[in-house]
Amino acid sequence: MSTLRETLEDLTGALRERPDDLLLEIGAGGELLVARLRVFVSCLLMLLPGLNWLGGGLVNDSLAGLAGTLGVLLFSLAWLRLALRSRRPAWLPMLSSCFDVSLVSGVLLLLGLWSTPVATVNSTVVWSCYLLAIFATALRHDLRVTLVAGVLAMVQSALLWTWVMTTADGPLVSADYGSVSSSTQLQRLMLLAVATVVSAVIVFRAQRLAQWSATDGLTGLHNRNYLNSQIPTKVEAARREGRTLSLALIDLDNFRHINAELGHLAGDRALRHAVAVIRRELGREEPMIRAGGEEFVLIMALPIGAAWERMEVLRRKLEAAPFVPEPDVEPRRLTLSAGLASCPQDANDLSGLMKRADERLRAAKAAGRNRVLARDGE
Image (cartoon, rainbow, N blue to C red; front, top):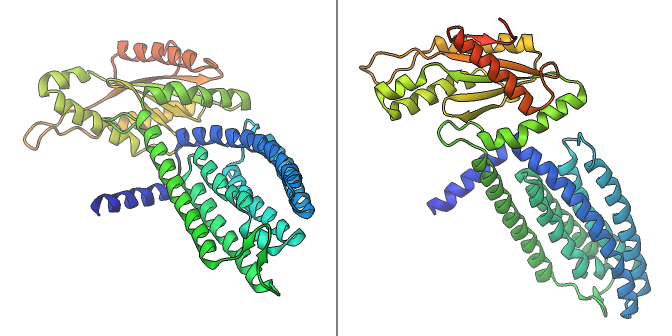
C-alpha cells in the first residue's frame, strides 16, 4: 500500500510539474513521429471500407468508413505540416491528441447516422482506434496530454452511448453489429480507463528515465549528456532566429584544497552549497549544467554585456555565502571564476563557444581568480 501511495504521489507531482527542456524536446520528436505515423495509419485505414464492402458489409457502412478515413488522411497531412515546423506551437501535442480521439468519435457518429445507431457503440474496429489514440500519447512524453486524451475518450464514448440510448425508437439490434448491451459498454469504458492508466505509467517512467540520464546525481543539475544533446539545439535556434545567447564556463576557485583539507564528503557538501546559492538566483530559462568536477556551464539568453553583469551578481552572491563544513569548523569562503562567450559574436556552435569561454576562464584564473571575463585582453 505504501508503494502504491508513493507512486500516486509521484504521478501527482509530475502532473504539477511543467516538463523541462529535455522532455519538451523529446516530446517534440514524438509529436513528429506521431504525425508521420498518423498519415501512414490513415493510408492503411483507407483499405478497410473496401475490405468491408468486398466481405459483404453494408454499402452505407463502407461509404461512412471511406468518408471518415479520407477526412483522417486530410487532417493528418495538415498536422504533419505543423509538426514539421522548426518552431512548433506549444499547444500542438495537446490539441493533436484531442483531435485523434475526437476523430474516432466522429467516425462512430457517422456510422450511426449513415448506417445503424448500433454501429456507433458496437463497431469494434473503429472503437479500437480510441486505444490507439491513447497509446500514441505516450510518444509525446507529457503526462497531462495522456490523461486528457484518456478522459476525453471515455467522456465522448459515454456521450455516444447516451445518444444512441436516448434517440433509439426501437430495439437496438443489428444483424452485422449484434445487440447493444449495457455491460459491454461499461466494459469498454473500463478498458479505456485501463489504457489511460497504463499509458500514463509508461509516460511517467519514460520521463524519469530521461531525467535521470541527463541529471547529475550529486547536485541535481543537468549533466554533460544534456550539454551535448540539448545545448547545440538551443545555439542553433538562437543563430537561426537572430537571437543572442551567451555561455558562461564557471569554475570554483581552489576547490581541491577543500577536498584535501576537509575530505571528499565535505567537498561534496561544499559543491552542493555553491550550486544551491547560484541556483536561487537563476530563472527557469537559464539552465545550469555540471560539466565535470567543480566546472559548470550556464546558458543565458542575454547579450555578452548583460551576461557579464548577471555573472557578476552570481559571483558576489557566492562570495557572500561562506560554506560551513561543521558547526564548530571555521566557515570557508567559496569563490568562482568564469569566462563568457556569446553567439553569434564569438562562435555559432557549442564547440566554438566552449573554446572561447574556456580561454577567458583561463585568463580569469591567471589574473588572480574570483572574477568574470567576457572579452579578450581584460
